[in-house]
Image 1 (cartoon, one colour):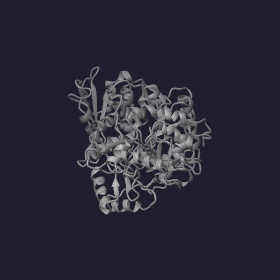
Image 2 (tube, one colour):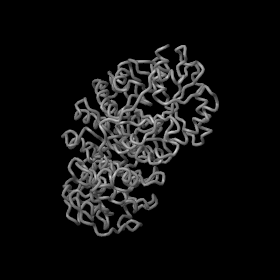
Image 3 (cartoon, rainbow, N blue to C red):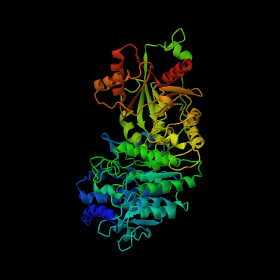
Image 4 (cartoon, rainbow, N blue to C red):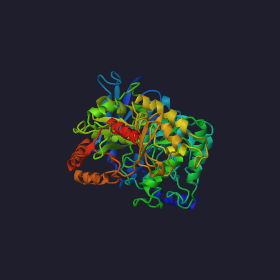
Length: 625
C-alpha cells in the first residue's frame, strides 16, 4: 500500500474503529408495511439529520445508510416514480416536503396512488428486492471505491454497501438476509483489493466504460467516502449521497478527481499527480460512447471544501483557489463535450431527482418579447430615433442557477418572497436543470408574474466553456463541437421559451471566435453575455444577436444600502457606454427591489429595465453605431 493511501486510511480508521455499535440516535423502525404494485414508498430519513460531525459512529452509519438508500432509489425509480426520500432541509424548510406538497397529491400529479411511509432503507430494500440483483461491496480503506460502487450499482442493478462486518452495520444486516454479493471492490476477508486512489477507477474504466455498460449520457462528480474525515466542512448533508440516485438511474460514471496536473491530489498527497490523466481517460471514453455528437451531463462539483483547493478547512491544501479549480474542471469537461450541472457547496444536496425525472412538463413554455415600437412608446428611444445619451440602463442578472440542487433548495425561499413581481428580474436558470428538477421549472413558469423573465444561465443548456469547443481544441485535440453544441441547445431553448443566454463563463478556456458567436446566434438570438470579447470590446453584434461583455464580479452585499452603493459605483466604469449588467447570486426579490429603489433614487437617469427591453434596446443601440 502506498504512503498517500495510508494517510487516508489512518484518517478513516479512526472513524471506523468505533463502528461496532448503533448510532447515538435511536433509529429503531416500526415493522415494514406491505407494499403493492403502483404504491409509492416515502422513505422518511429526517431523523438522520440529528447526526452531528462530532458523532464519529453516527457519521459512518449515516454514510452507509444514505448510500444504500440512494443507489436503491436510482434503480427503483428508473422506469417509474416509486420511491421518495425525505431528508433535505434548507433555510429552515424541508424542501423534500415542499416539492412533494406542490406537485403530488389531491388533484395533482400521481393523484390516486397509494402512499406508504417507511423509515428503514433495509426494509425498503426488502420491499423492492425483485428489482435488485444483489450487492456491490466497497473498501472502507480506499476512498475511491465508494464512487466506483455507485457506478457498478447503476450498471448492474446492485445496491452499494460499505464493507463492515461489525454488528449493526448495513453490510451485516444485508448479508444476514442472504443478499448475494455480486461485485467485490474489497477482498472477502476485508483486505484491500486495490491499493491506490486511481486503481479502482482504472478497473471501472476497463470494465464499465470501455464495455459500454455505463451510459455516456451522464457522469457524476461527487465526493467519495473521504467526506467522513471532515463531515462538518460544508454541512452534514453535503455527503451528497442523496444526489446519486439520478445518475445511478441513468447508469452514469462516478468520479472524484483533481483537475490539476501541477501538484498531487490533496486526498492522496504522496501518490503523484495522476488525477488529471485519469480524468481525461474517463472523458475520452465517454466521448467515444457519445460519438462526438452528444453531450455528457455531469452532475456535481469539485469538492473544494474538502479537497483540491487552498480552502482553510482542508487538511492537505492545494495552491489553487476554489474558483480556479472550478474553472479548470469545466475546461477539462468542455474539451470532451461534457457540461456541468454544478451542485456546489454548501447548497449541493438534492434528493429524489430519479423520482422527479418522471414529472410531466409541457411541450413549450413561450415567453413574449419587446419590439422597437414598444421601446419608442416607453420613451427609451427618443423622437429623433436615438437612444438617450444621458441615461444608464441597468439589468439585474439573477443567478447563479446552474445547478439542480440550487434551485431545488433555494426556490422554496426566494420564489415565495412577497416582493416578487414588484421589480424586473431576469431569472437566469440553466434549462438543462429540467432533467433533474422538471417540477421546479414547471412551477416557476406556472406562477411567474410579468416582472419575472427567464433567460438561460451559464452557459446555455449546460455549464461549459464554449471556446473549448472550437478547433484547434485545447487539451483533447478532438474535432469541433460547435455545431453539436448548438443542436444540443435548440430543443431546450424551444421548450422553455428562451432567447437570451446570461453570463457565459469562459473561465480558463479561450473566448469564442466568430464561429462560436454565430453558433449562439442560432439558438440564443436575443443576446448573450460572455466574459471575453475580441479587441477589448464592451459589446458587439453578430448576426443580429447583441453581445455584452460581462465580468464575473457580482454584488453580494446583504445590506441593501451597501449593495446599492456598489451598484452605483459600477455605473461609472465605462461612461461612454450606457448599458450595465448587475449580477446577483441567491438574492431575494425584496433585496432586488430595495437595490433598485436605491439606485434610481441617486439619479433620474438610472433606469432598471426588464430583460426584453434591455436587450432589444441594446440591439437597436449597436445597430445605430
